[in-house]
Amino acid sequence: MNATTSARPPRLAVVAHAESRRADLFAAAAAAAGLPPVRVVPWILVLRGVAEFRPGEWVRIDSPGEDRGVDWLLRGGDDPARVEGSGRWYGRFVAAAREVSAAVAAAGGVSLDDPAELAVLFDKRLCHGLLRAAGVPVPESPTSGTQAPPVRGWDDVRALARDAGMDRVFVKLAHGSSASGVLAVQTAGGGRIRATTSVERDERGRLFNSLRVRHYTDEAEVAAIVDTLAPDGLHIERWLPKASQDRRSADLRVVVTEGRATHAVLRTSRSPMTNLHLGGARGDLAAARSAIERAGGDWGGALAICERAAALFPSALRVGVDLLPLRGWRRFAVGEVNAFGDLLPGLMGLPGGGAEGLDTYGAQIAAVRARAARAVPAGTARTGPPSAAVAPPSTAPSTAPRAGNERATG
Image 1: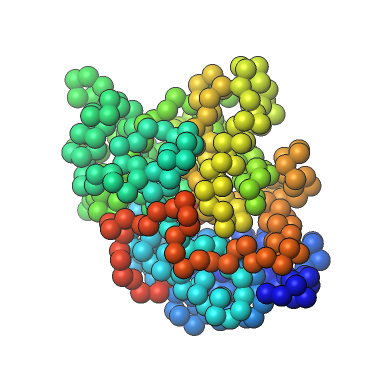
Image 2: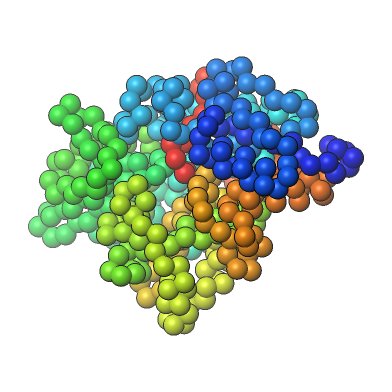
């Protein structure tokens, strides 16, 4: 891209679902900034191999979730509520992201997402290992990084947790999102066990995502769920005691845009999962910041942790960092880094974060305009993994037809 071209307002395209909230909000932010209309490239066309990209376009990949046809192409199942199939989904999503980036480059455009970074962001084992190696505080995990042992089922979960001295763990799908397949497991003497999850198991042993959080206390039931999930890949983390607000467990979703922590929302819940669709609610961010400061903690330092995590994905225009304030509000750990963690309608930028008066999409539009003005295609996808990232493990499908997905936020 030459300086003359990049001095003009960037022409934007987004790989998304037509008329989705994400596409609509991104297009509205572009319009508010005076940019040309955003062109939506439907995910279904990408997965069918007939999507087209135009010269000079700046192309953003957004979530392929919330579409039944796309979900079928990615996971192979006929019911989007089913939990199984995330391993297949991952392989196809990464393949699709690579195809998009190659097609954009061939057309003379600029890709705003690096497929190698997406491959790490959508594997909790790889992402955790990358964060840990960089010194970012994360929960302890026996399945972190490329050399972690495989988790073949409940017996392995039991053994790995026991060997690590963990009696409270989160068991997560390696490629899951929006708390799909997550179990918060507590064990105690006498064989007692309690697993909290949104997973519902029917009489045929099939697993479904539910909007109701439930508890399982029969180890045989817990084992059956974990054994069903294991072929898709599992990640285990220590269940850290989080701070609370109004007697509700609390954590933070911090959106980092172009390297800066621009937006934050406090999420609270009576269950271990704070996802809003599972009964979580937005808490009082100002009160949380005051609690941090009263406890002798550092709000700026907390945001800096999120920025350090995001810096490991230098091509990403934005990521959503789940920051866990530990009991007492003085220490923090990064729970996850989400590629598509920016769907926070109505949330305005943090004071001093460089995006005051802008929502998460407005901040991204400003960042794209700044990239274009510099005439540096900073988001151009690379053919290999980013310098800080690692290649996906052999447990992910190595060959897959065209496709790609992410059910919600990553």
